Length: 186
Image 1 (spheres, rainbow, N blue to C red):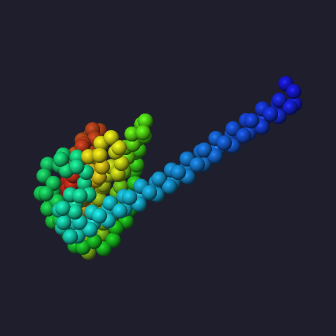
Image 2: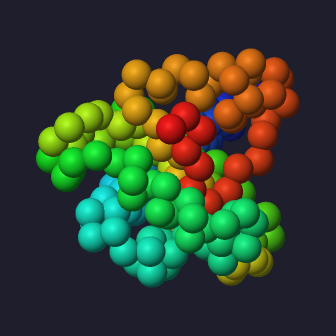
Image 3: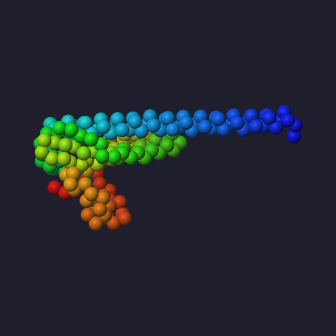
């Protein structure tokens, strides 16, 4: 191999490494931007919930949930009334517990996104833990778009929702399907 060909080969390998590195950096930047947008959307969803709960407005609450969540909930109106009775005091502040956890599927142009977010809500009387499962995007099934689950417990009961023996989110290792408003411990 001549020196010229060897240098051309080295230069080609170097350029390929640089280009692949740029794509990786670009993907990392895009991922950070998407994570930020997901967090902003989750916070906006939480603000809508807090406002509807504060006004005890079932219609506003219903608009936040997806059509499928409303259809699958056993009795959304009764669950909304239970939520209004469950939350004592007016909301003073909220803070993110963790997340959001995002699952996104892009398959031949069909996009589905599932965002789970977790918050502590401080009222004038108590602190609550909210787990929200939201589907902000589902290009194939528009009836899925919207909040799918709001699980609310008092802060001191948060650990119980992950305990499989409590049968709140899991029954042992089996994940349980919940929709609408769910208050497992009243």
